[in-house]
Image 1: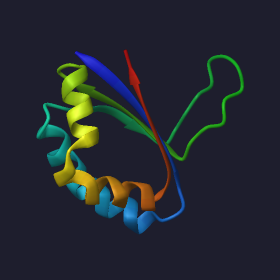
Image 2: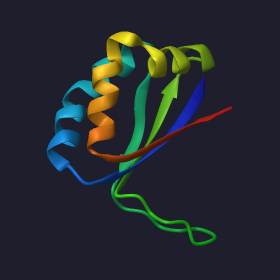
Image 3: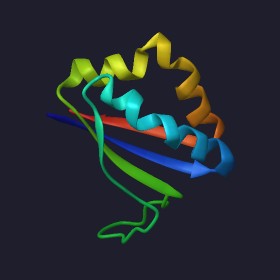
Amino acid sequence: MIYAYAQLTVTNPDALNAYREKAGEALARHGGKVEAASKDFTTLDGSPAAPDTAALLSFPDRDAALAWANDPDLADLHALRRSAGGSDILLLG
């Protein structure tokens, strides 16, 4: 199991809502799922800039995560997420 951390700064809530409607199915296509997502944060250490929303994603392995990120059939969906505002996703491992 490998995890990815996604953080979003939302400037277009409608685009984010449209993305969310399809995101779970797209993740599942590569064995991925949302483990947790939240708009509420508590800083434990340091002073990071808090995003509007964040999610912890899981995938069976690194190859599955990369396949999800690079799937040409999901290019429009990834573009929709990006159109919602700032979108950063880090693969942990």
